[in-house]
Image 1: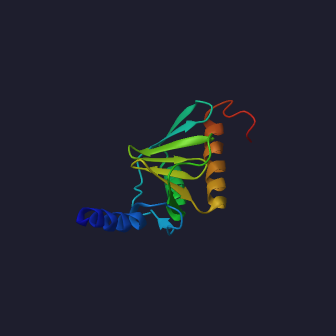
Image 2: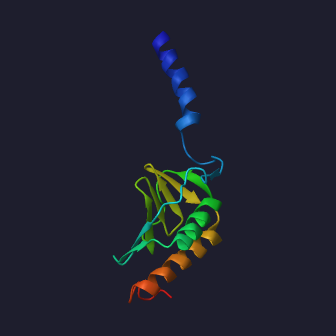
Length: 136
């Protein structure tokens, strides 16, 4: 009976800590995201681009840093215009998902997500002929 009671207490303690992610507060991850020397962009049509321009990188990183994120179990949407490989442990998907050390976060500010999507696609279209046909 003592063991059952101990297990029940442990379970009751762990549910709020590790339970469902819904209702968790927004998170600002700006201190976690460092500015890299380059960003690898993989577009949805398979094209790739290495961004090395310091101004473009700073604009992208600042846009990602200024957003708040909520912890989620996994992305709720599939397909994207691009994925940014920022570091070995940090990816950003055009749909506003941030993957950090195998943990997913969803951006809160949809306008910021859309603005960044437009910017990254425009950078690609300048550098890669025929990129993402059908998207202006």
